[in-house]
Image 1 (cartoon, rainbow, N blue to C red):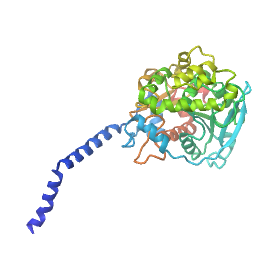
Image 2: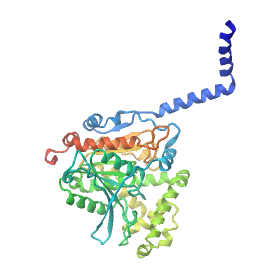
Image 3: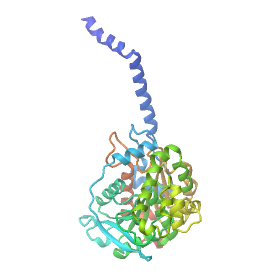
Image 4: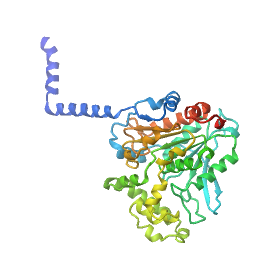
Amino acid sequence: MFVSHVEPWRTYWEFVSRPYTVFVCSLTAAVYCLWGRKCQTPALVCSEAFGAFLYQHCPVVAERFTPTPWCWGGRLQTLVCAFLKSKPPVTYRNELIHTVDGGQISLDWVDNQASAPYPDSSNRPTVLILPGLTGNSQQSYVLHAISQATRRGYRCLVFNNRGVAGEELLTPVTYCAANTSDLERVVQHVKGLYPAAPVLGAGVSMGGMLLLNYLARKGTDSGMVAGFTISVPWDAVKSSASMEEPLNWLLFNKFLTRGLCRAVTRHRKILEKVVDVDYVLKSQTIREFDERFTSLLFGYKSCTEYYRDASPDKKLPSTAVPILCLNAADDPFSPKNAFPLTIVQGLPNVALLLTAHGGHIAFLQGLFPRGESYMERLFGQFIQSVFEHPRDIKKACGIVKEQIS
């Protein structure tokens, strides 16, 4: 009987003392410790008053961000998100509006007529979504954002840049991160339809650059009550340099450049009136494309001049509404050395939330990260805090009483 009790323990110690068992256990412990270090509370850079508001109404900012354990690094987060993320079903109502230059803009609406909190469409809050460089209303991050907004009773509108949503180009003009005229036209259109409904702008990647440039340009006349951005490239020159690193070029830059070139090919007949299309289609990087196409189309002397004008970092002091910006330190599109920390620290209305990991428009969590992630939860909580506590957030951001409606 004594031996029968001892033998299992002897067998156990013989097992754990084997070299491969020791190796596996050590490796597991190392991975666990490394993953534990990745699980950190994001850094919130903002004024004390704005921070207090966010901690109260957006509790996710105080939570530890726990990235998907098998997604090591920003590149893998970005790639996995692109291929694995689910796409919630969304039914749009499309509208084409015309611009002063004779062009047209495709808008995709989710009216949310079944909204219980806001049955009257005249005052139903509107979330205006600006997709990324080659994105449109069908991107997974757009669909998840709409899911977050509509479940809270809000109306959504996706602003598709010219020529990316299947509509024809009527003029030889597309879009860029520095030109805000189309966005201004869209905001005027929305406010004309629903003058009593508050509008919040939400921009992703290049859409975030465009939104911030617009908010800075318009100041107190933006027609928006707040802004929210995800994975904004703060300095286009530094972003371009990061994207041209060999691995980033292979994984991301090359793919995006091909997408831009496909759009030019689709609209070749009208665009060849103003650019050498064949020369544009030989572009191997986004920088080359912007040098041969974007900067020329919008009147810049060089791509560098365009990038400086498109970068929103130094324009933040000109904004006049509450803005929350989410970025990851391992984002290959937006390097952390470009984050405008010093600028944001001196502003009452801008908050920068920084995670150590998360990649570009990813922020994946869980072992099988197909559903909503950190950025969707943050987005949902922030838009709700803006629409449900308008006076509190304006007071926290130092908005003068005359601007509080």
